[in-house]
Image (cartoon, rainbow, N blue to C red; front, top):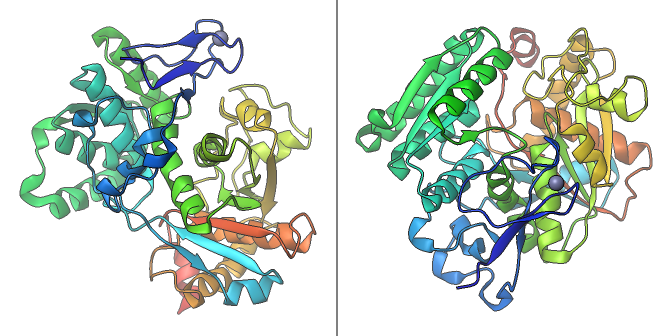
Length: 403
Ligand SMILES: [Zn+2]
């Protein structure tokens, strides 16, 4: 039977049709290998047999045999059409995509369902991953449901938070959770060290490594957020705005639009002023060399996206040609604290459930407002803002401000 997809290097065009997990093309460590779909049966897209599950998009997901499809309960979250925010920002059509109601309360469940399904179909029973929080939790739960084993590398500096999140997930899952499917390795002090140790471990054991931007299974899983938006809008938005860490969310939104419509919308990748390496690089203010740029200080509460390094993803985000990077909260933490309550109230007023808009989502909304006021986004444009996490609303200064 002809395979329904192959992988094609973004740099040299070499085509791969592998039955095993490969991270990048042999031509270059930067040679990303996105999945390309052939002979898509659009009559079967979305497939009503799968109800509200993300598996209804299986025609353009990297799986051949649906027997290997792992069901993690990732469900469609509807778009909110914003009346209050539209008025406040002076724009007609602005939507919020809330994605923090998934089984482990973050959009990382979308990455996990795809990675486990692909690896299962390839015949793997174990994988290696590294995380400081949301992504790792989604993958531990995923391993248990898939009946696979994950070796999770967690840096010591994230251990307290990790244990809190992990305990909560285990409690929520109850009897369904099989702890035998998870091996926790507290390894290294920082995230970089934990990742390096995870790489070494994976190489030694010849196991696949679930590793951020280069894991195209992750991109494909995350793409389902885009597919839901396209379904709800009945077309492509003009703009998609998201808080930007390594850029997986934006890259995968672009992939969804390319797969369905063959074109890209425009992107607002938003970083907080106090830590915005990609914004600086895009303005030529720092050298955006792959992997080695570090912003020397951080002045932000938005640590979920305030990542002081330019990751390997920067050139790929630039290469999709449509990314507009923008920074918000000029003045750092003090400016953030002044702005947070207003933004939080805007989300609340348009119906985002209590506690479901984290700091990265506040930054995204602030970025949307800025792009509209600057005239980059036109009043007649359709805009989608991603409300994706629930990070760090416990900042004491913010709590005091809200009381
Ligand atoms: Zn290549």
